[in-house]
Picture 1 (spheres, rainbow, N blue to C red):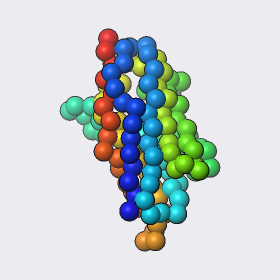
Picture 2: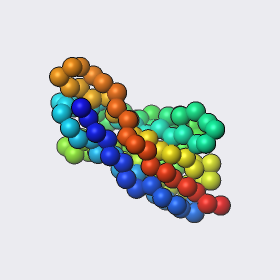
Picture 3: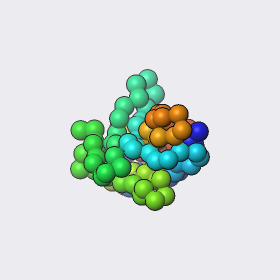
Picture 4: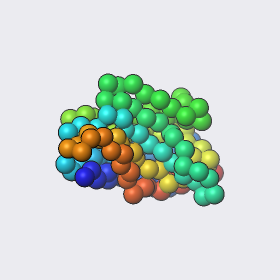
Length: 119
């Protein structure tokens, strides 16, 4: 089993910055793709940014140039640096990881952390 623990959410003014962290722990060999998704009230969950263990990244068009995803493989931790935030970035942000364990690759989700951007 893998546990994903998120931190760093909160209230921030428009134009400000916030950094989210997500640490993976438990019984697994490695995590390949790790990423961040978000869900605003009344909306479906959407991909924000993902990164592979090799360093490749993928971003939603709405956050390109403002958000940066990074990871520390030694710590099994993924980060999301959010700059120039906008009110429309308000959502619950979820960490996701695809990790290899004894039973193969499985998909895991964190509990979510609230990000609120005030105008």
